[in-house]
Image (cartoon, rainbow, N blue to C red; front, top):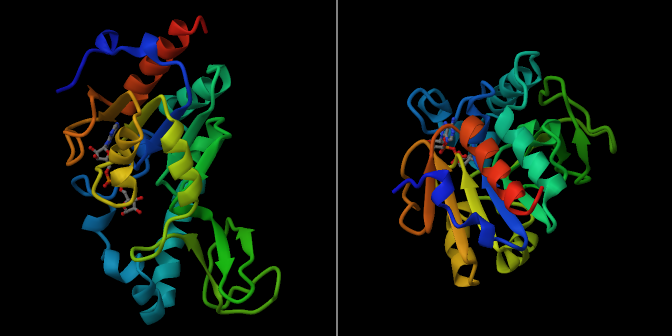
Length: 250
Ligand code: APR
């Protein structure tokens, strides 16, 4: 059941904060989510464009899928929204570590000012060479003819994105952060994809005293969170950050 922000026991929080974000935090910036009505998986086959098998079967189709999302992300009208910017303010003003673990492959957290950031599902603006393992910034279209900037081989560059069936990045660092969190917040994620969907349970098992889900609606994980704040992230996240920082005299 969603609380009012003033009813949340935020003045008791005095330690590191871990924030998990999903596609919902970028929705108000104009980037589609995956599972909302009309979302990405209603227009593309996940199996064809977001699995190693799909890439092996038709690499050009996969490159085209990510090329279009990269072009969209780099278009002038896609900018960080107040939720991204509020997280950066919290990171700068909070007396303990604030770590953002994002499932998103866009760069809106960075452009919103966040620095303590882990892209557990990779990054749309990077490519990885399957020969030399080099990871390179990449802002143009990619094809099977694209050459690795390090080793020069063609046909071996893939999106630096974690596909279904692959292990997300930074899992050990994430686990360590969950073990120390005084507050765990999930923003804009449907809690349908593991391991991210299980982070709230891990945080609680480590004794995290306060867990908060921020979404437009309940999710499969809502019963695990102690608190919920319903509403668009662009409104609820700035309000939450203001309450947290004012409780610390920030
Ligand atoms: N504010 C807050 N939450 C929102 C907003 C908003 N403005 N708009 C949508 N949401 C919520 C939706 O209610 C939904 O619960 O964001 C969530 C988006 O869920 P998904 O589309 O499933 O995205 P996500 O949870 O990030 O998906 C996880 O699945 O396909 C893979 O790798 C992909 O990282 C992705 C992972």
